[in-house]
Image (tube, rainbow, N blue to C red; front, side):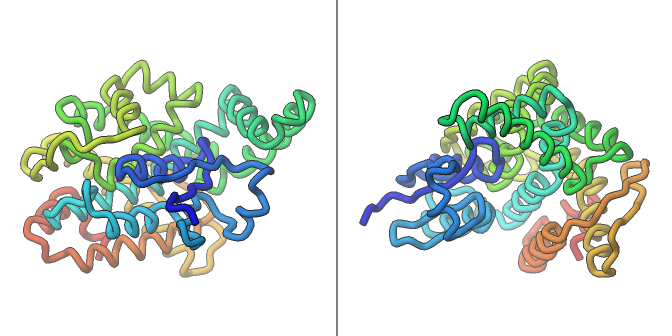
Amino acid sequence: MTATYRIFGSELSPYSVKVQSFFRYKNLPHEWIPRSPAVQAEFQKYAKLPLVVTPDGEGVQDSTPILERFEAATPEPAIIPTDAALAFVSALLEEYGDEWGNKWMFHYRWRYQPDVWATAERIAVQMVGAQGPLAVAQARAAVAERMTGRLGFVGSNDKTQPLIEASFKQALALLDRHLATRPYLLGGRPAMADFGLWAQFYEAATDPTPGAIMRASATNVMAWVQRMVSPKAESAFEAWPTLAATLMPLLKEEVAALFLPWSVANAAAIAAGNKIFEMSLGGTAWSQEPQKYHARSLAEIRRKYAAAKDAPGLEAILAESGCREALE
């Protein structure tokens, strides 16, 4: 029996590369197994990316629970600050990256034709590259058609496009200022927040349209994107007072103004059994089919808030940012 973990993933999946980056940071022995026809039979036993198979054959799925499980088992180098208020802020930012940041990545990847063809080509090569150019061309066309038809799953449509793209550029600018004086979001080492947000920006950086925007406007973010491929603990986490000046704007203008109101409306639509929901978001109209998984993830971040709400300083942070009401 090997003592090596096996990560079944895809370089094109933000949740897969998130797990791979974490395993590198923890220096956990692992093998990266790209999703392909050659491993399909074994993958089907577990059937969800990202997937970590432990040395004793247990399958562990879903990126956030994977990180939380192995953080508890291997607490050093830590990704969770000992300051409970800061630890919750980190968890909230990770959730924002996983759920709202994914809208940016998926939108740009499958709405703009150069991105569609570039990504479909990469997927096709991964799937059928060994069968030759004709098989790749046929698979590329099929992937492009299938994935562009799924834009609605993340809420990307003609009505929401301006807000999704404005949010991406706003978050990019806010993070670029924040990362100008520190290597990671909470200071000298990566936190949960880094892994969740980074994975979406990493994928965006590999695609033509958002990658060009990032390279032209956010050199600090691009340096962080590269750093997080194999992150290291360079020094300690900072305290909130030194982070607040540049991190609070992200909480206010993105998490409180966009992500949490959308999350609450989405969960309400699920609870009501609605097929579509409409709302005003960021001063514009937003309309989409509700997303069931995101309703569960809102419940989970609310559970974490209930457990952390008495942490010194947390209520002040959430009140000032405007996040508190949606979490209660």
